[in-house]
Structure formats: structure tokens, C-alpha cells
Length: 204
Image 1 (cartoon, rainbow, N blue to C red):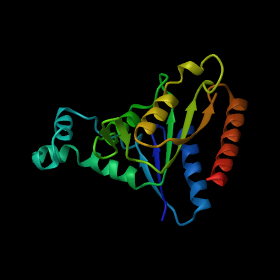
Image 2 (cartoon, rainbow, N blue to C red; image 1 turned 90 degrees about the horizontal axis):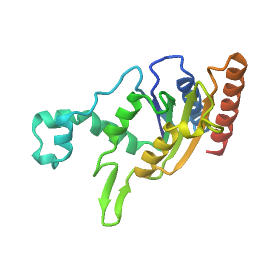
Image 3 (cartoon, rainbow, N blue to C red; image 1 turned 90 degrees about the vertical axis):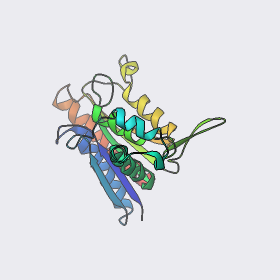
Image 4 (cartoon, rainbow, N blue to C red; image 1 turned 180 degrees about the horizontal axis):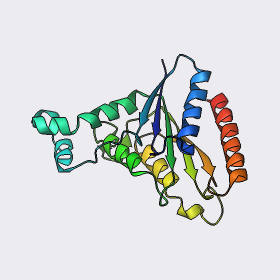
């Protein structure tokens, strides 16, 4: 049975990124009704930031970790396994200060684990979270997918880079942009995003 891992990062329950990412996950599930959706609402339930104990734990073999160190990476272990068990990844985030929400960055810090989701080899790091399709739903008040502000979008390139590092290279991005430019702009971008979502779900 296929598993869809849905990550939403906005602290606002009615955010465009959360709404559109959820619709995309549901469209994908509709194509394959037996699939399941695992939703990590990072905005409503933020993860703890990594700390000194966490760093100490991941730099030791499992058998050498103290009880406190084991506890410090328990959530990280679970998140990494959750990612590895998924077949499809749907990420919904807003563009904030030209990057992703800190809640999503913290998830990345938890799942990017040497020996779990990537490994070091003689030829450099190799991703272990392979064989997955990823969708990025990126909402923004302005327009960043093209035009003069495109170079200021550090969210999409960052996500594409880290996913590729983990072995996920089949990535599609859906922009929901211009949402601060008035009702007409919102209607236009939401309709365009929904059309794109339907197209991508059919092609999945």
C-alpha cells in the first residue's frame, strides 16, 4: 500500500500552502484509493530544534549512546523512518523572508541523518531516500517563479537541493503566488494551482 507523507509548515491553519498541499495529497490518494496519507503538521506541532545532546548522539554508534542521547534522537529516528517508508512526499510551505518556515528547516535537520537517509562514500555522499516522487507547494505574497524577484526565492532551490542530497530527484513545484496582490490575483493563482494539481495527480 502506497504512503503519502504530507508536510505542512505554516503556523496558520487556513494558509494557502497548507490548503493546496492537502488538496494535492488528497488528489493523489484519489488516483490510488488504497494509499494512505501521513500528515505532519509542523506549523501546529513544531519539532524541537537540534541541540548539543542531539549532535553528540548522532556522532556516536548506537551502542555507545547514553540513555539521554537515545532519547534526544528518538523523534529524529522516527521522522527519518517515516520519510524512508513513504512513496510520495508533499511539502507545503510559505515563502518567508525568502526562505522556508523554520518549522520545515527543523524537520530537515532531523531527517538529514548520515547512515539513515544518506551515506558517505569514496565518491562523496549518496542519498538513501530514493525511489520517491516529491511535490513542493510554495505560497508567496509576491511573484517569485519568474520575473525580477525570482533570484530572491531561496526556498525552492534549497528544498530541491536537500531532497536531491537525500536521493529524491523527481520533484515538481506548484507555486501559489501573488496572494498579497488582491482578490483577483488570489483567485487566479489558486485556480492555476488547482489545475496544476489535477494535471500532476493524473500524471502520477
